[in-house]
Image (cartoon, rainbow, N blue to C red; front, side, top):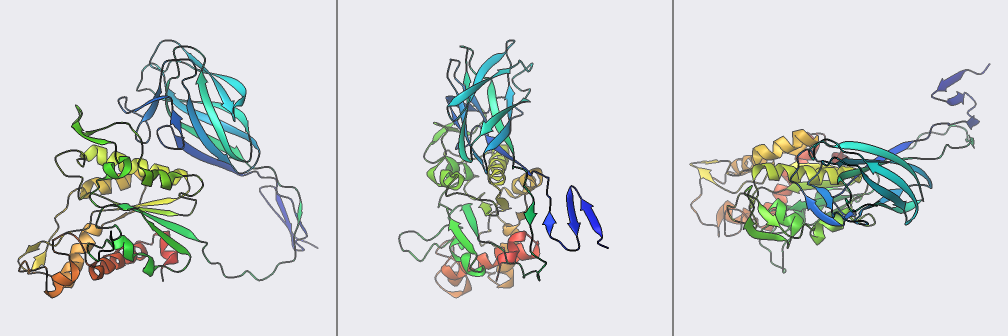
Length: 415
């Protein structure tokens, strides 16, 4: 007699001849209105609290002033669109929903009571396999409401009965290929112009992984988190909140490359983010305030997660500073990085603490100020911040060890 086990609509027998699976798997992806590949026929603003990411689309008050999203579906079918919006006026703002330029459906964005009150409205539309253009086009001169993000839920088709071969031994599993993306400043960046120094630790990182990992190092010298994200559009002027003005609000080519749906971050990839050295500069364009710093970390983490990638935050690597015979901490934005990690459910590697702990293990203190000789000269360039190749290699090793010690899944790929 065959024994039968029924689990969620699947019938399994000991002969394992046919499996009837009746469950469609739903996939939900969020697309921020201020982040490519979305476009906004207006401005990206952040003056009304409660939004997600780094801002929202404030489209022009005109017929046709649209918010547009490019979304990807794994198969043709239907998708449920959840539009998060705020309408602080007293009248509804109607719009057409166009999918790939055709078959418009009507949607009405009712008043929400205040511009800081955000609600979600859903509509179901047909989608094609692959990339789809979803366009919200207002039909009155009032334009659209403020649009925060679009959440897209797609369901795959119900599989038909599939014959199965008899059971065979399960092969040992091995992880697939992933890309590790790096965003940071000069202490992470590759050497420039063929110079040996400075060498950021990101350029030494790949040697700690097996052949299934590709490291893409987009760190750039002299950048704060904001200038890294928005080069060359961060001005030397501060706004009323004391933050540097960005005009136009357009992402840098390096961040757009990571967000690219074809060649950027993919499911299973990792994004390591380390800033906090240049961000404390008092003057623009590098200055970043505490709250803004955490906001931008959160925005980057959300963008990575929306693409199925895994963000990791790092506190800034320490410079060499001695208090007698002891290397001590000397960087800011430690608390901000840890707070952003907690708020966004992102693991944090405390590279600041780990690096000055390494300096103590290497007995780099006390130090007589000579960067041209001795153990400090072998580790650092002719300053207290930047690394020689040997120093960069050791910092990269510290990061790799932390990934293993903290049991971050990327450790699967370490040698």
